[in-house]
Length: 208
Figure 1 (cartoon, one colour):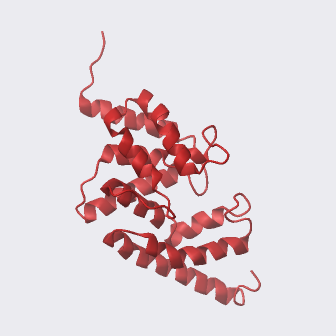
Figure 2 (cartoon, one colour; figure 1 turned 135 degrees about the vertical axis):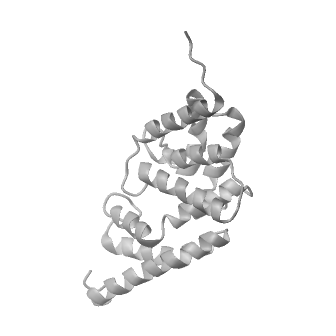
Figure 3 (cartoon, rainbow, N blue to C red; figure 1 turned 180 degrees about the horizontal axis):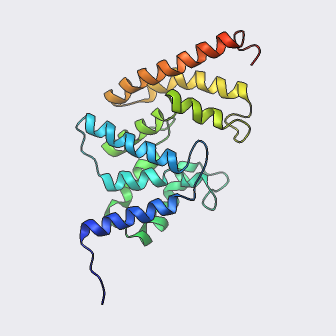
C-alpha cells in the first residue's frame, strides 16, 4: 500500500536528500560545512532585517552554489557559479524540488561570489552577503590558510596572507545589507588583529 506524504513531509524529504547528496563535496575552504554556514548566516541576516525570503530556494542554492567547482560537474573554462547554474536542475528535479522555484535558485547562485553583482531579489542579495562574510573574520582566515599549496588562490603562505589583507580591506565594500556591513566591521577587526600579531611575530612579515 502506497504511503502518502503531506506537503511538509515531502519538503523535508527533498532537503534531507539534498544534504545527503552534498555530503560528497568535502574541501577545506568550500564544501559541505561552508554550505551549512552560509545557509545559516543567510537566515540570520534575513531574520535580523525582517526580510522575507523563500527558504526553499535559499536552501537549495546554499547546498549547490559551489557544485560547479567539483567533479563530475566542474568544466574547464567555465566559471564555477555559471557551471553550478547549468547543473542544478538535473540535480534538484529528481529530488522533488518545486520546479516553480528553480529560476530563483539559479538567480541566487549566479551572483553569489563577492566579485559578482547579485540580481535585485532579496534571496540573491542576502546570500551574496552571507557568502562574502564567510571570507572574512576568523573563519575567512582559516579558509584562506587552508588553501595553501592546494589551490591557485594561495600557492604559498605569503600569497595567502596577501589575500587576507586584500579581503579585509575590499570585501566590506562588496556588501549590500546594513546588517552584513555591521557584521563585516567585527570580522574586519578579527582580521586586523590577526595581521597585526603576525606582523609583530615575523618582523613585519619578513621572516614568515
